[in-house]
Image 1 (cartoon, protein in one colour):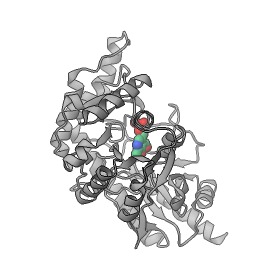
Image 2 (tube, rainbow, N blue to C red; image 1 turned 180 degrees about the vertical axis):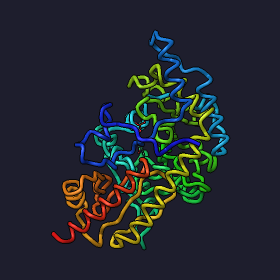
Image 3 (tube, rainbow, N blue to C red; image 1 turned 90 degrees about the vertical axis):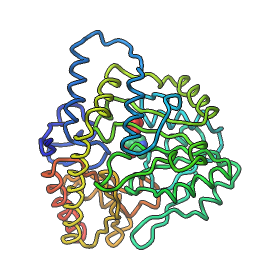
Length: 387
Ligand SMILES: Cc1ncc(COP(=O)(O)O)c(C=O)c1O
């Protein structure tokens, strides 16, 4: 049994998330408040004690850890030759945008989606093209007619898929992924499947790796994976790119080397091996704890703040909440809640303009904070309605 209720003081260690005043409760950026798995900490301490913190190689053991973990947990077999080490998923995405598309090309996304995708596209002078997710009856789905039309455009050369999807927490099905893969193949659009959230999944659910769907998907895609979200080690800056297609992989690798993001730091190797090889029990317990947090929050909101609608989801520790029965300006609402109650959540428009009447809340924290957060939320909404 691991103690996910144990509090960690993050106010005094330069945490990005907790960089706020004493009375505030940050439930925004996708970063967890838990102590990481004991084996990971042991590996970091051991490496620090060895001293001489010079440059590192990426040994076969690291690739094998990824291969075995994905095979055991997600029933997909990667080959070592398909894999490229990278210092982070965002670094990989930006590099791939540069190496696999040209200035002026369209890069397709499905809004609302992780905000940094937008930066990776515009900072590189490519054009963002969104096939917005359709929101109907309180739930999201892909608009395949629109997706096909946008893929047909000759300027569209890459689609960044979020699988599972941040911020809505949706696990795409094998059928949906196969349909995306088929259209992408037909219109020569390369798929970049960002699977960083794939190991935070409700117990009894499973995600489907894009490249496991069929040959069409495997041969026309690049996947980014990392242990950073699920083991709470984003600060170690270590991730992997997986690409079966030799021609595509060579270009990606060249780009990644040019961008100087293919070499890990001294703590980005052994702790990761320990994560994948020896910390799965910790991960399973974490997923149960997060599921309970989400359940508690949902039940409270349904009963106490029924004007809100929580979009159903089975992945990530994030909930995507519809506030349209209160306002279509979640930015104003979130700023008000923060000012009045100290609860810091993310207003949805940062994930795309169709997110403007939603907010995202991060429940990867001690249960005591979840309870505090839901009470602050109720108080904030009540005060907002009286304004
Ligand atoms: C979908 C998605 N991709 C990538 C990242 C960040 O990845 P990294 O820290 O490896 O750059 C995040 C972090 O929130 C994310 O949600």
